[in-house]
Image (cartoon, rainbow, N blue to C red; front, side, top):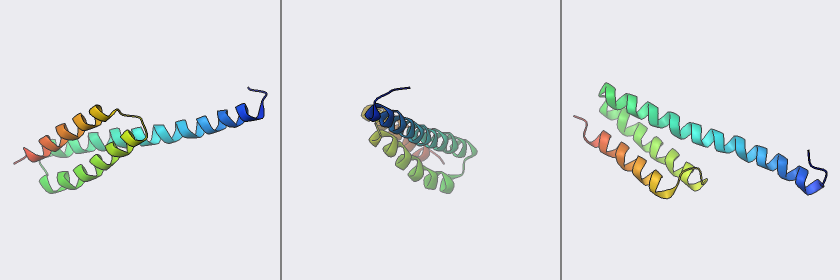
Amino acid sequence: MPNIKSAKKRVLTNARQNEENVLVEGRMNNSIKKLEKLVKSGNKEESVKELNVTLKNIDKAQNAGLVKKNNAARKKSRLTKCVNNME
């Protein structure tokens, strides 16, 4: 444990930020899995609704710095393509 006051505060803020990052990344991954499951089931309307939520979660993760720009673009493109190719 640090002795300096500013270092103690930094430890606390880093812990809080880490918790937030875990939540954002988990939300993104869970929504991707949910969308892929909906696409496999063949439910077009639900898939389109979930796609919007998933894209939003991917953008939030990118803005938080958890996912790089090209990685986020690739994920969004791949998921959009899957939903658009449904019958």
